[in-house]
Each structure stands twice: as structure tokens, then as C-alpha cells.
Picture (cartoon, helix red, strand yellow):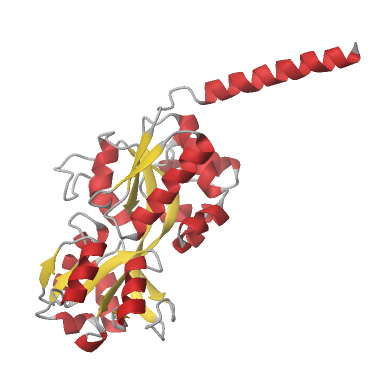
Length: 324
């Protein structure tokens, strides 16, 4: 008799759990798309891994989509053409106020933050026999800055202009830029992403290409001109041809969604990523910084209520102006 009661209680508990799960999944889509950037960059690797993690753990088939990068992703999420996007916070700020390259004056006020990713680091690379070791050596050279609309494609031309360095700019993805560098059609490749960059790693390992960054004087000028950037260093031996630390600058990345995403889904995605850093590091080493404490690097974009709820429940206070 007692055993029968246990069975009844177990069945009731199971039914309650199933009902809660059904309620939690109310409004969830049958499938999702995740806007990344061009193939060959860190965004695509990070995004593909994140899409697989969501598919496996949450049971919502999610596909990575190659895009033009952060500015493009902000617009895709604003228009609900993609469910999740990856952005750097400079282009996101411009899109939020309608001033971005693709915003067309329309404030992207339906975009919400989910979680911090990592810091995008700006760096260049050139073949060893080019004698290019600094930005000033690029004057008059042919330089790829990544796809138009991406973070490097947006910021490197502005930075070079601020430093009064004139170059011939090409907009290509990382894979094509590497091939053109090998073929001698480019003199250098300027990019930005998490460390290590897989394309830079391949160029350094196979061709002995040498990464380069900025001088302390150049860094000071850049940080004075662009408040959304922060100073930093590329640690020695990040690439086999880089023996010493290199001065650089960077910008933080966040995952974003549309405000209309169900709160329970935004909560579960945030929980999945923020509570599984070891798994995220398997996707890409840059995920070592995909940690809850780094939410502080978002100072202007409202968090989705589902994400804000996860952070609050786990002791990370989100400022009130970011919880609308």
C-alpha cells in the first residue's frame, strides 16, 4: 500500500515537472538561426559551436549563418531575421542610436543583450620578408581589413585615417585575405577577433608570417579618438612568430537577441553558456573570458529580462537602466 502511494506521488511529481517544462517552453521556436560573421574568423567558430551547444542541450535546432559581421548582425536581430547575433559593442552602440552603417537612421531599440563573450583584439599580420612591423609601415600598401560591416572592416579604416596613414583597402573575409596575402596580392591583413586568431595561426605556422600591432604612441592616439576602445596587449607566444608582448587595443563582444524572444528561452541560453565555461573553452580559447563577471563591459544595451533574471539569481547585479 505504501509502495502504491509512492508511485502515485512520483507520477504526480513527474506530471508537474512535465507541465512546468511545457510552460517554460511556451513560445519557443521550432528552430533558430545564429548570425556570426565571415567564415575563417573567430565569430564563425564561436557561433557554430554555440549553435551546436544550444541544439544539443536545449533541443532547439540552431544553425550558424555567415554574415557581414556585428553591424549586419544588429540589423538582422532588430528585424527578427535571425534569432541570435554576435556583436562588438562599438557597432552595437551605433546601431542602437540609428547611426550604424546599416541602420539607415532607424534606432535598433528592439535588440537586447544576453551574455558577454570575450574581448576583440585588433592586430595585423604580414609576411616575414615584407619588413612591415608597425602600422606606419603600411603607408601606400594594399591592406585587407576584413568584410565591410564587420568590426575590423568598420574600425580599421577609421583608425588609419585618425593616424593619417593612407592605404589601399580591400574588404575580404579572413580565408580570402590569407590566400591573397600568400599570392602577393596583399601586403598585410588587419583584423580583429578573439585570441588566438585561427587564420593568423595558420599564416604564422605555415609561412612564418609575423603579427604586428601598434606603438605606444599610436595606441594613445587611437584611444583618445575612440572612447569605445580599451588598451591591452597580445601576450608573447600567442603565435609562433611572436616572441614578445605586443601593444594593442580592443572592444568587448556580446551575444544579442530580439526583445520578443520568450523570457524562458533567453534565460536558458544564458544559463547554458554562463554555467558551462569549460565547454565554451572547447569551442574556442577566447571563451576563457565568457564569464558572468564580464557583464560589466556592457554599459548601454538593455539585457533581455530572461538574461537579467539569470544574472540576478546568481549574484550579479545588473544596473536598473539596463533591465528595462
